[in-house]
Length: 136
Image 1 (cartoon, rainbow, N blue to C red):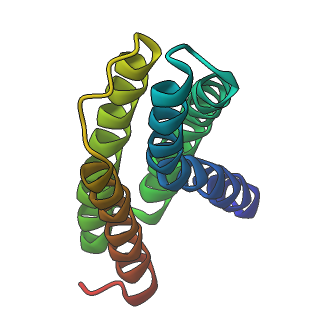
Image 2 (cartoon, one colour):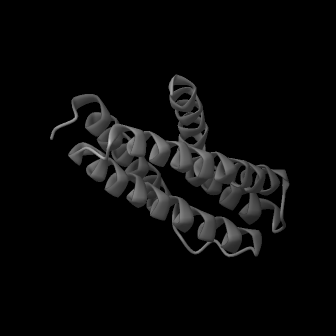
Image 3 (cartoon, rainbow, N blue to C red):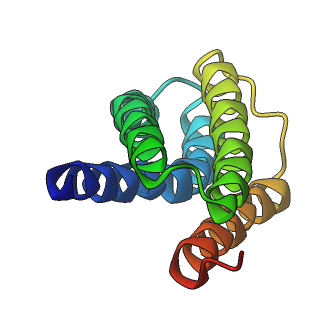
């Protein structure tokens, strides 16, 4: 079972990188689009990062569920799953922002994107706290 934990942790690390980086990349992509008035290399990089991390997210969730099943679904795992669900929703929302940006629609302000980016940090901290402390 240790190898499943290793795969889980590696995939979570990759997915979290995208969760933190893509909203920030959208800020720079928006600036690039305003300057060039066309789709530039930063947009391509952002899309590739999002797509690659989607696979990591699927593997992270699958191995996480496998580990939860192996543990017998203790109470703290339910809290972790709720927090991960919130991160998944954040990730899906990010994907919608990426799709709109690809069409040249940057409706959100930089301030919104900065705050949106920080929300995921608090979500990740909550998941880590739950896993480390196992509060119940």
